[in-house]
Image (cartoon, rainbow, N blue to C red; front, side):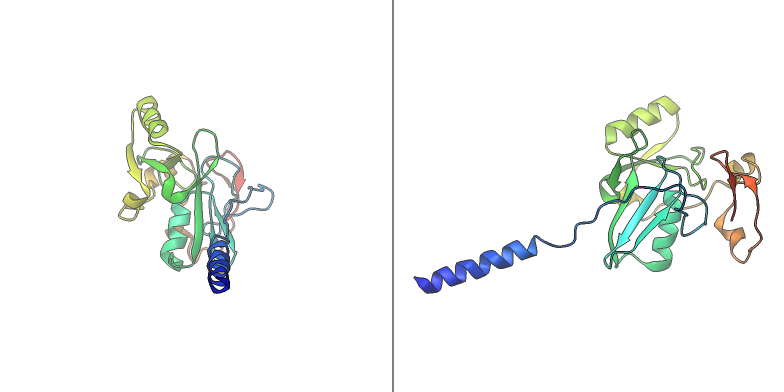
Length: 186
């Protein structure tokens, strides 16, 4: 009988320890210091902000979901512990894989990727109905999504809009107005 108690205690301990893995939580956005690690633009505390935390505890913040996707393409996804997007309506953090997305090239986002996220499909459908544009996508759909920036939409925003392609190798600082109406430097 004593042997079975030891087996039970050992198995129970293993079960408890297995449930104590890392818990990933989204960090607040601090507009004074948070800068997108891809485009170097200010990360606004708004519905477009995204972030991911690696398994070793590093958190990376982005001003647009397209920038987070670019980071994933460059660095892979194997070391991501959790990635988060925000609900377009209430700005609450949502796990990337649990969100519902709406895409249309005409939807204005900080880096012109035209993709917004919602905590549920009903909210996404309401957005499409209100805006008159968009298609619903899941996180799985985004793996085959064509991640192009709407450069026409960026041209309409003035010089503040920019693509990542022209930025590479361009270390010149520009003080033009961005989509958020602030002066952006990159």
